[in-house]
Length: 161
Image 1 (cartoon, rainbow, N blue to C red):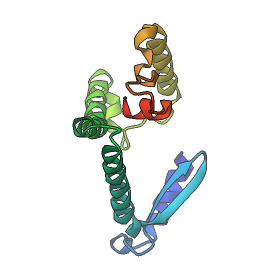
Image 2: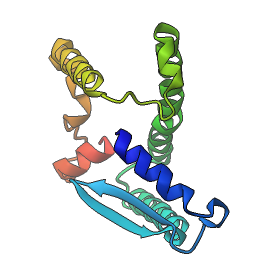
Image 3: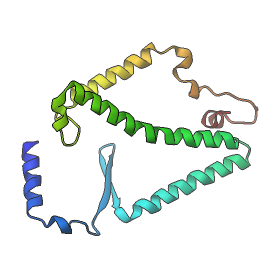
């Protein structure tokens, strides 16, 4: 890590940091180890397109009587809830960790240099919590509940019918 940081520091020292914003800004992420990238100007159009598709699918499901408006609104709220709660929970847990181990407060990115132990602990906690959960409530959202005989099982699972 030291050699990488030194190379990064040298590379940034050679540039005018005020002029770093350019048309070359890009969004990038990895999917199964492959780097995906696209220009920054596409962020808002893609987000708008995704929102329009979700709304259109909701309207289509409502017109075909596959769901009700209250269920659509509850589903939308359930989709937004993790987006709001997860960052707040992460900040809270990080503050608790800093209280327990004050040395972690100096980490610039909030991630220890070698996070393998934390990853293994999180995986073990996940396996333990899944193993100790009663089978009847382990995956209730995967059990199809059918009210009408003409609704395919996949639709019943995804829409809660």
